[in-house]
Length: 315
DNA sequence: CGTGGCCCCTGATTGC
DNA sequence: TGCAATCAGGGGCCAC
Image 1 (cartoon, rainbow, N blue to C red):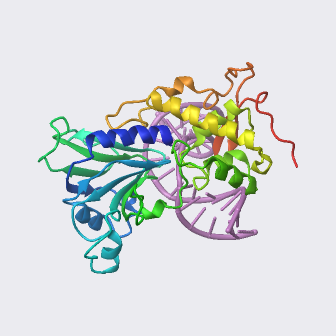
Image 2: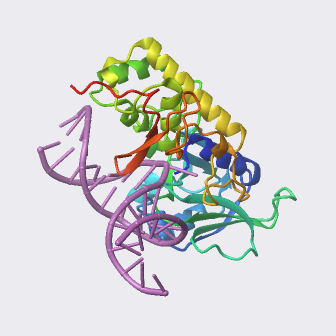
Image 3: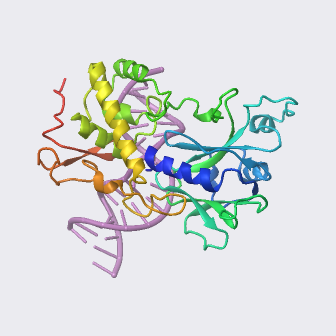
């Protein structure tokens, strides 16, 4: 459930508390949390030991931590191929994390009691760590186990050390390299509706159910509008609102309805109070006063103003 | 192939 | 009180 702003809050915490440290021990306590690492939990733990964590990266809702310091690449090890003697400087390994609906990455004191849904624990060497980080470890906690960690080769030559398995994920709208014109062209080619398109991580990443509804409300667009009829100005306005709402949410630490959505120190964000549509069923629209409605939509809900956001004519 | 429906999982809340 | 149904910020997979 964490979307781009919440994941970015976590990324910043990892950058501050984990980057630069050297992994010592890895404990996998639930197999589902590691299922995307096909070589298994023992391989995951053994390969990470002794590696140093690089800068924390993010694309959309995916997070990764490049790791370096020795050993063959994941690919060559998995296939039994001898490591290349002169590997490319920008070809390496990265821990990939996805939080799913309920995942958390927490930096906790080693002696803190285990969380009920603690799935993976990563401990670090004390040597060389900043005094303020000493004695802490990284924990992946996940009630519903839709999220998980895995270890992957990075795309050769990619300056961000993007894990190869997420190379198909689109850039997110806060990425300076996001291509607005290409996004508009892709929308026009699709035979789908606008909210489905916003949630399609191969078209635009980082947008989930909350920020899709918020951006559509700001744009006065109904979630069922077909994308094939979008004009350039309409796409531009929508992208502007997507960027605005996510930037505003990020500035206050993201959206937290409960203690499930927290930064690495367990603290909640404050954007819930600024939501205009999501979760506001029967409350007055802040533009026109009409009660906000909730509609079942793709096993979830869509919140919208029935007056500001008129449905398209049925075709 | 693109698109839409279903399923994975645990827990909180609501209504009978 | 108990129990069933519904819902939750995600995405992979599989039919059509």
